[in-house]
Amino acid sequence: MTPLLSSMFVIFREGLETWLIMVLALAGTNGNTKQQRSIWISAVAAFAATILLGSATAAWLGNHANLERFEAAIAIITGVILAWVAWFCHGAAQHVKDLPKHSAWALGAATFAIIFREGVEVVLFLTGIYADHPNVGLMGLSILVGLVVLVIAIKAANHQIKKLPVRQIFFYSRWLFSALAVYFLYSGIKELVEHGLGF
Image (tube, rainbow, N blue to C red; front, side, top):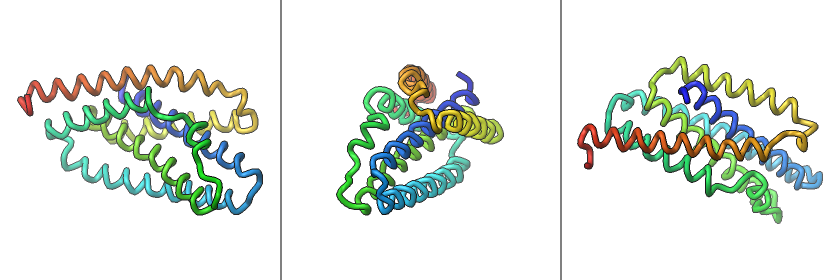
């Protein structure tokens, strides 16, 4: 899969899961405005924290993108996390089921943690893709395309969430993430072997 399609799919898939978490969490408040406000504030804070993390990572990556040891380490870490997300990570429904409902503060803190974790995954995956194919323009275009596709999907399903083939999307994404995990692990280990870094 090309860097453009890989990055686009990561943005779409993780964005879709974040949207589902928000929809289910808000629905689970049963109209409690205090809890809903807490969820919205936490979501905005998580998005802001993700952007800050992404910016810091991009600045740091610019100083290390050409180092073989760094590329190998990022590829292996990305492969492991992709495999974990594909096979062992809870889905949106389970995340929402685990949310504490006894206080707005606890609900907000848990919502922030869940959404920020999705953001950390996005930053990590994009870092792995960029380290393998360092092209800022291509990365920016793929993020933009992924966001556009995500917005279109959300707009189309906003009032018809039951019609959105969520199960199929996540089923196929599991196998796609597994393929990407194998690719990144292979790429990282190959880099280590070729440069004698640890083998």
